[in-house]
Amino acid sequence: MDSNRSFDTLEVRAGLEAENESFAALVRERLQAEGAYLINLMASPGAGKTGTLCRIIDALKERFSIGVLEADMDADVDSRTVAAHGAAALQLHTGTSCHMDARMTLRALDSFGKLPEVIILENVGNLVCPAEFDVGADLRLMILSVPEGDDKPLKYPLMFKVSDWMLINKIDTAPAFDFDFARCEKNVRALNPGMRIFRISAKTGEGADAFTAALEEEISASMREKREAKNA
Image (tube, rainbow, N blue to C red; front, side):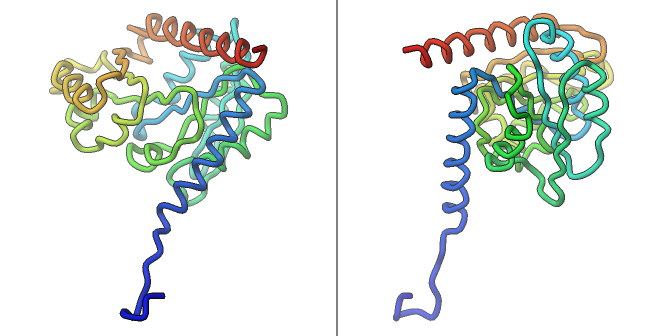
């Protein structure tokens, strides 16, 4: 402790971030070793995570084995829903934690034994905490729904900065809401020029085929790269 003052400072956040990164690296190593692909799906409550997830499962389950990690503070409603669509589902109760971190994710992956080819983590619903923790995913996929408003990139910039792809969901409700698609996408690209953006309705299916086709291509390419790296 500094003798010139009566207190010292410990940067606990830096320690937490370093620990999380070490576990995220272990997650990536596990995915690489087994050639699996992990998606971190993030959104606010009610944005349509589970409905979108079911669209993904229905589109990809004939091509890949799929496992879903359903993270929630409590309840198992979503796990029952995705299991009915043919995915292996594991319910994760986070208690008072409003996000998944890499250590939790690694422990959850261990519960599968041999990993499914595609694992989708449906993170706890909010646009703040999940953005702060790298879980070692291959793809960070976020959803913004039309009823939430087009100003969310300005209010929660970190989520839009760290995500790789964004879905604007519930486009079927656009006539009922003052949502400016062009303004929203402009604000997103100011934060993240490389963001890939899709407009969909998980309810009606509009735009879903183009999104899931792009996702299948992305997963297949990643799996080829992992096989090549393993055999090199």
